[in-house]
Length: 106
Image (cartoon, rainbow, N blue to C red):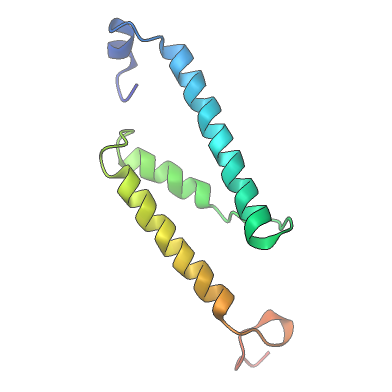
């Protein structure tokens, strides 16, 4: 659809059907991603495990002007790699008492 659903409608595309289909596919992909993060990474449910990552995806799409070819895929990949590096670093940091990093006063 992009920024001009009237143009798609004039071209014969069913705008309402396309929007609902996009919402269903997007919702399914978000559910699969959330289930993967929850079950594959930790093996159990943890409150706020996503930590706002979905809003980063929404911002990437908006800044890409709702077009996949405008760097949205590349920016999403870079953002995902950065988050993965952060998560790996967090997991590799030795933890002491009370979950604090070792060498911490706690």
